[in-house]
Every structure is written in C-alpha cells, then in structure tokens.
Length: 411
Image 1 (tube, one colour):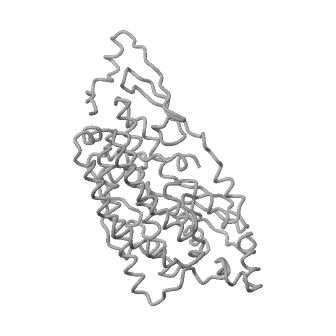
Image 2: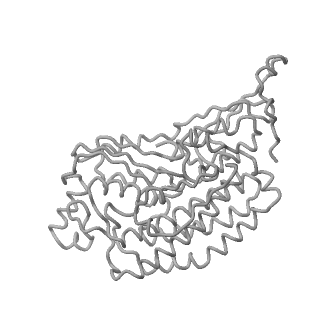
Image 3: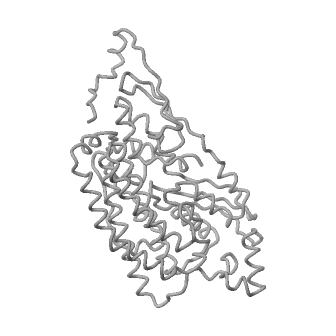
C-alpha cells in the first residue's frame, strides 16, 4: 500500500536545518522490464522514496516526421503503425482521415461503419494490454496471461481484414483495400458474444481484490487542473473527472450517430485509470454492436472505398485486368497526382487520448510539413510531478497505468 507522505515531508526549511542526506541515483531503464518500453528514468532516491526523477527519451527515435515528408501520402501509412503499436489500426485510420480532409474526399457511410468496427477493436486490444500490465506490476500475473488470449483473437480478426497482426498497415485513403471476408464477420460476432463475460471475469480478479486496491488507490493521483495544464487527454484525463472525448466533442467517421457514455473517475489515481479503461472496453463493445446493426440496415453491402478515382486506388481486380486502372494505381502510389495545397489538422480519439496529425501541403507529391500529436508524449511530461514523494514500487504502477508506449513517445 502506498505510504502517505505528509505535506511537510519535502519542506525545504526542514531539510535545510537537518544534516545533509546522501541520496542514491537509480536508473530505471532504458531496458528495465518494468518500463515496458525503451526509455529511461533517472531517479534520485531517499531510501525507497523518490526525491526527483528526470526522463530520458530518444532511444528509439526514428525520425518518422522527416521520413514522412519525403514519401507520398500513400507510403506514410506503415510509419503510423509504429507509433502506438498496441493499437495500430487507430493510427492508420487517423492518418487516412487527415489526408481525406486535405483532398476533400467524402467516404460512404459503410466505410465509416467499417472503420468504427476496426478502431473500437483496436481500442479494446490496447486497453487489454494496459490493464493486464497494471495487474502484473501489482503482483498478479494470472489476468495478464488470461486476457492475452483475447488480444490474440483480435489479431486474428486483423489478419482476416488485412493479413497483418501487430503493424497492420490497414486500409487506404478513401476506405479499405478489400471488403471484409465472411470469416472476418464470423470472428467479429463471436468476439462480441464471448468477450463481455470474459471481461467481467477479469474484473472479478482485480477490482475488489484487497491487495490490488491497496496498491492502486491513491497511487499516482493527479488533480484535474494539473492534468489540464499538461494537456492530458484520453483515459488519463477522464480518470481525473473530465468527460472529454474527441468522438463526442468533435465527431468524425459518423460517431455522432452512435450512443455511448464517456466513463470518468474522481481521483485521477491508478485505480481510476484502470476502471476507466475497463468501462471504455464495455462501451467499445456496444459501439461495435451498433455499427454491425447499422451495416445490416444498409442496402449497400459491397462498398468499401470512396468513389474518387483521382486519389483513391482502384480495386485490385481492375488493376490486374485493366491498363487504365494500372496506370492510375501507379500514379497515385508514386505521388504523381495533383495534390491540393493546404493546411489541415485532424484528430481522433486514440487509445491513449487525442491522436492528431498536422499536415501542410504545398501542392507537391509529399507533405511539406507533417507533425504527429502523440498523446503519450504529452502526458509523460507530468510523470516526475506524479511520482515525487512516492515509493519506487508505486512509481512503477503509476507508469503502467499511464500506458506510456515507447513508440508513441518517440516518433
């Protein structure tokens, strides 16, 4: 259980009147297993208590933004996979919608609903990882091994849709590269049937477990005003008590047609962050079911891409059998089509918060400026303030509950 540190524990006047203490320096990372990623915290320790900490990032910096500025828009999608690789389809869809905003492409309703199915599956997969890792870092391995079966099943759905699992490169500007197969629909419906009971069983392992509660309640608590000052979004902000969600505040992809609640916490602590993500998985299941119902109500059962031959790749069967389709396929992929000049920003509700893409085009074949707003990079800056005065074991749990993904941190 987190030891309560009184307000005068770090009082400067008190420290000045005492004999100088000898502090220890502890390196947590860059390859420590508890960081769950390649980044480092250099901690100044007073026994088991953290006096201060300094983050070090850049160990897996891959210059994504500069690489993307030298690639045609269609060749940027694989780069987005490597941001938050726990929910790659969200990154893919966010990038595609940003380019569509620049090009003025309007996607059919069926494409919107298909994207929502995929994005909410990705959100569930991401939250499975985060919440099961919180369990591991509190000493409960069972939930982690148990829930990873479900993440694997979501990856099987990805495979049916696009052929990939972790780094999906899913979809295209304007929609998808192919229609969903009958096997994909079968797996999606099976997931909706069995996962609610599995999720409830996972909750019974942890939510009222005395050890888990002692290790997470009031650990890494963060007030709402400080969270807003740092620019928190996503579950970490909602755990502090503010119901901000991009899907509601600035709807995209027809989210305004869906009914769902935005879960919030009270204390902004590790337990609240865990519970918010648990509740969000339930809401995602509801959204997916609503999307399936809307898809069934559509007369059109075949459309999976926007009908804009200037920028949207033609179907593969046409490329293989029609010379004009082959030529346009080549021109679009190689960036030989006329891209309008402009400046756009588009954001989606990623698994960790507002995932945004700032795109500037000068009319050339590539972006003249591209910036990824990674939510993990924003909220990780608050970590030293969140853990100062806490014990090392609590700091590890706080980091896990923030869901700091190294790929998202280091673009």
